[in-house]
Length: 282
Image (cartoon, rainbow, N blue to C red; front, side, top):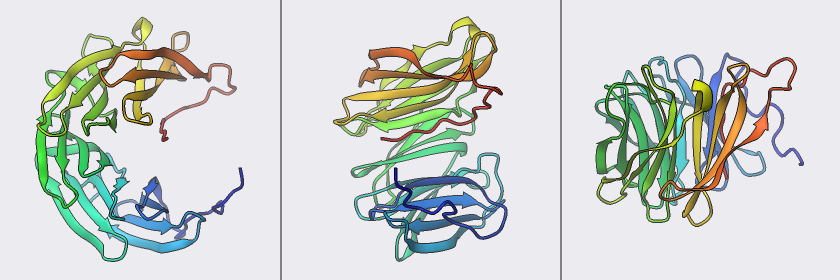
């Protein structure tokens, strides 16, 4: 419980937001954030010492989905995705040399997720159809799989997603899907890491009761990559407010080994908590 980092980890005395952090591939932490339009980053070592001071990463235009996502590789670099203007940008950031590669995922837009797993870089993005898609790169920035269209049809929203990889390098995408006139549902896709084949194509894992809503699906591989934690926010049926944190465990084929249950209940909080975002790591 000892605080290693100071309360004020980074400050440039300007309006900032949308901070996201990950490991930096060298035993420390890298943080990305927006200062309205520009993207900045900074690195700290594992004890909180400054490694890279706040540094401008990109001055691209403002977007509706401003988060910058990152994931480290085994070579000490960080792989990054963010929404450009309007397509998704993918780049590789070297701790000394800076940005060494950048690509545009053509036909992409809106929200993205990235996960480096061994020699594979898994990326979920939303295409121009506004539905969730998948693409895979190797560590040097070459496209090896995809793009693969995951969600198809007249879906209203598939921005809310989680991304994980199993022990064989296959990608699992856990998606919130919303269709007009139908209940919201949480759906699983599994993509073969070598061929791009959909090994699981739209398996409905969960529908909230009473036509309530569910948000922020999270999927995390357990040790060994043979089973996975699932988490999401869910509406309380009595108030229709997202005051429940739900939890479950599945195997690599989407079978529940721990059925969904309420891990935390905010309905007795006063005032009602306005829970906006759920993030988790292992």
